[in-house]
Structures are given as structure tokens and as C-alpha cells.
Amino acid sequence: MQPAISVIVPVYKAEKYIQRCVESIISQTFTNFELILVNDGSPDNSGLICDEYSRKDPRIKVIHKENGGVASARQCGIDNASGEYTIHADPDDWMEPEELELLYKKACEKNADIVISDFWVDVEKEKSIYRHQAIYSESANIVLDQLLMHHLHGGLWNKLIRTSCYRNYGIGFVEGLNYCEDYLVCVKILMNNVKVAYIDKAFYHYDNITNDNSITRKYTIGTFKQRQFFIEELGKTLKGSHKAGLLKNRASVAMECLSHKIFTPKEYKSIYGGQKWQLIRYITGYKNKIKFLKATLL
Image (cartoon, rainbow, N blue to C red; front, side, top):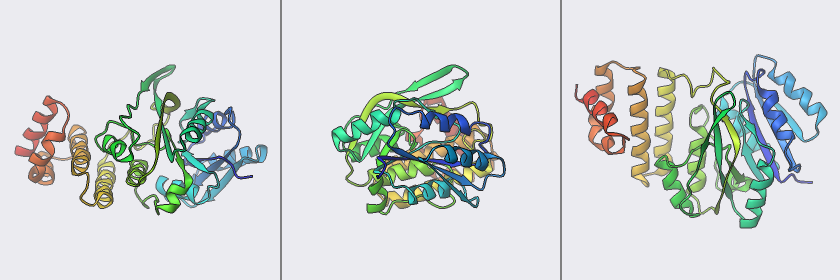
């Protein structure tokens, strides 16, 4: 029987926390799912832990591959998914028990291609922040605008997506893009006339404490290059439409690298000086605008 949902988890150096993630998935109140654990050439015991779970639970499929980065691992999961819907989870995060049941119920009620929910950010032990995703409309184009303007989060772990959307629209992850690779896929899906639904509850816990090696927590020159790669791919995807959204994302990257002081003033000016007046309106906060203008005018 075809599973209703394929849950995809890219796994790399996750031996310290993968068990919490897997346990939260196999303990779901909704049982008609498959769990695809993609071991992306992890050098620790992550693969062995995944294999042990697959021996105990027939719903769990483990794929071992050479290391290629999180985008290739997610793509591998999509390529091997047999569920009507897919959802992604990261190995350092976890789900509350009713997530799959209530997301799938909403998808069936609305005949939706994508169901978006709120989520939690775990910031300290036993302390979480609720992140409300204020969907203004079920129009895919309006939701896309909200996403591009950073009113919505771009993660795939709070979005249940009809698997055929990837295949019918030729949507895939960009090889080598390992930062905002999920955001870009959300953009690609919403650029099509998909049917969107929203559930105003949070189930997924985005753990901002456990994984010290997460690329989202260490900003380096490599992070900047990945962010620039993302901007290039976003520009190709939008192809001249949603110009404000593209500029918003460029401005965000500009402020990130300024805040983390990874360039000298001369280097920063050479990168962003010629774009300052295009980007300034999309930088949030008066002090940030002043900071950016001073840096680009030095």
C-alpha cells in the first residue's frame, strides 16, 4: 500500500541527536507513512543507528550515499519517496506526536498541494519560542510574496507538500547549494498554481541549541559564498519577476556579512557600494540602514 506521507531526513554527523528525531517520527499518532533516512556519507555512527532503526520498523528506509551535502541528500529522499505527500525534517530537530495526522487531515480537507503550519524554535533547554506564520491568503502568488519578503519561514519542515509537485513541475534541489536550499525549493513550488492551506498550530521544534556544527550558527566566508550562490539561483528562478523579493534577499545577505564583519570596509564597499540605493529600502530598521550606508560610503 502506498504510504500517505514520506518523511525525509538528511543525516550527517548526527549520532548525538538522531535518535530523538527518529523517535519523534515513529511515535506519531498517524501511522501511514514511510521514513526515509538518507545517510550522506556520515563518518560517525549515524548510519549504524539508522540501520538499527530500519531493522526494527518496516516503515523506515535507509539510503547510504557518498557525501554530497544536504541538497543532494534531500534530493535523494525526494527521488525515492513513494508517499502522496512529503515533508522534511532535520536530524537535530523533532516533531510533536500529532504533526503528521493534523497536517494530512488539513491537506485532505482542502485538497491542498501544500499545507503550511506554525512552528517552535527551541532556544534554551525547556524554553521555546512560538513562530506564527501569518498567511494572508491561500493564493500561491501572495504566499510567495510573503516568503520572499521574509514574512514566512522558508524551511520545508513546516510544510507538507504533494510529492507530484516536485515531479510534475520539474522541481529539484540545486547541487552544491547547502544553505537556503529548502527556501529555494519553496519558491519554485509556489511559482506554480498550487493550492495552499494553512493550519495555525505548531508541531515542529527547530532546535537552535543542540547542533554546534550547523551552518546556520557559524557565519564564515564560506557561508557568504553559499548565500551569494543562493541569490544567483533565486534570480534565475524568479527571472525578472518579484523584483522586490529578490532585492529583499540581497539586502538580507548584505546585512548579514556586515554584521559578522567578514570583509574589510574596502572589500565591503567594492561588493555593495554600487547597489546601495537599490538595497537600502529593503534593510530593516533605521540603525541598520545608517550602518549599511556608512559602510558602503566609506
